[in-house]
Structure formats: structure tokens, C-alpha cells
Length: 351
Image (cartoon, rainbow, N blue to C red):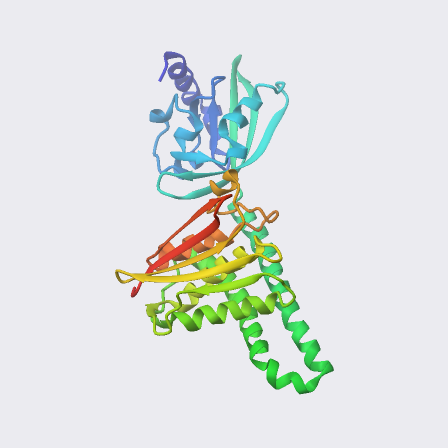
């Protein structure tokens, strides 16, 4: 640490009134100098980063303090802090940001910055209000109602046909049952996502026929978009191929992959599903002709990021979470203007 920072640190630490005031703030707080380097921090910030004392942190920048790899490009910490230089002494700056620690933990904060003077020393106070629960509730509500509305609309359409032509009831019954199952899955998927984040899911292993699962999902998708002119192509589907896994969680992942591919496609486009089997591993590849913009691709698996509107960004995040944490697999994608976009989900034949 610099001699200046060292002296300010000692000055603040030996001021009982300042220390008591800082301790009363019930959220992580950093005190920064005018070069955006830490002078001291409160106990909530130390608890956040599993530190016992702020002495070793003096002189570090905020990203270094919280041990982070990066922040959202749209909310770069340097941009946030540099904005403070444009403020007058009695103004403050507030912005939401997301960041990920080196151990893979996602953090979501509303950063609030304000200039203040301490014994004629110009300092900056940085409040870090945890908004993870707030964003979770907003996202959960939007995703939940959006998915339920889509499925319920498909169910209502088929029931309307049966009401007007009762003789079609027997023919449409399998489709009605499939949509009803989809409605239950939509409800359970929100619960499963919360449990997955809390490490409270215990995978239930069972034998899964891959062909049956793929046909179940593609039939369900067609029922959600009965008037769509999008095409669906299934490649290399071995009728005898089975895997020992958690069927419900695998269904969640593949269903999201298919839905995303259809949403990214236009009328006349073809979405393809390919299954390959090699070295005791099974790979699902779902392709659509669309392309993902570079700025979106970099953040695609981020917890709250979405291109579909505020609060919708959990489809790809949940795919990665369930695949890597509970199904022993890996998920990846490739995208280009020439070849389109392909998502790959690869799993062991038996977990």
C-alpha cells in the first residue's frame, strides 16, 4: 500500500466514531480514495470475501477486493467508478452490476457511489446492495408466467377443438395429456431451478430411451406452435439407445435447447436434432440457422442475462447448471453467420 493510503487507513481505523458508523451499515461498503483504491471496508464486505481484516486489502481496486474475473461489459466497474468523477460533491451515482468470482460464484449488486470529505480528505464511499433475491423473484415471476401462458394457450386451443367437435376427443387425447404434462413440468421446473442453485437436488437415476424422449419433446414443441411453418429434422436417432440418468433433469435441459432453437428461427427455417454415441458418451446437438451476436455469446450462460426482455435470462443458465452440476455432462455452443448456431449437450451413458 502507498504511504498516503497507509496513513489514511490508520487515521480512519483509530477514529472510534467513524468505525462505529461504518459498522452500523448493514451491507458491504468500501471506502475508496480518489484513485478508486480501497482505504478500508466494513465487516459485511469482509464477510462477503471471507476476510478477517481489511489491512491486506488497502490499495486494491474493487474488482481485486472481491476477487472477480469480470463484470458485465455493459456495467464495467471502471465505467461505474469513472462516472463518479463527473459528479458534484453532493451527488451520487447508482448502477446495477453482475460479476463472477474466481470460484464461479455469481454476485448481483446495486452499486451506489458518493463523494464525501473526511477531515478535508476527498474520499468515496461505495455501497454494494445485494439484489440477487430481488432479481430472482422478478425473473422467476416473468419466466413462470410466460411459460405457463404458452403451454396453457396450447391446451386451451386443443380443448376448444374438442368442445366444438367432440368426435375428435379420442384422437386429440394423447396431445392433451402431453400438454397437461408440459404444464406440470413448467411449474416444477421453477422449483427445480431454485433447489439446484441451493444444491438440494438428488438425481434419480433411471433407464431412459433416447428415441422416446426426443419424440416426446419434439411432439410437445409442435403442439406449442401448431400453426408454425418451422421445420424439425431428427438425425441419427438409434431406436435402441438408452442411458442411465435423471430423466426429469435431462428433459429440462433438452426442452430448453429445443425451445431456444425454435424461438431463434423463422418460418421456413429448419431446426435439426442430432444424437451421437461414442466412447460411452451421448451427445445431443440442436442446430438452428440463426446467429448469436458476439456480445450476447460472451454472456449467454450468465445467471440473469437475456435477449428476450427483462427477467427472462435463465434458459441457458439452467441448462448449464443442471448439465454440469447434476448430470455429469458438458454444454457448449458454436455460432457463425455461415453455419448458424448449434448447442451441444454431452453426457455419460451412465451417471
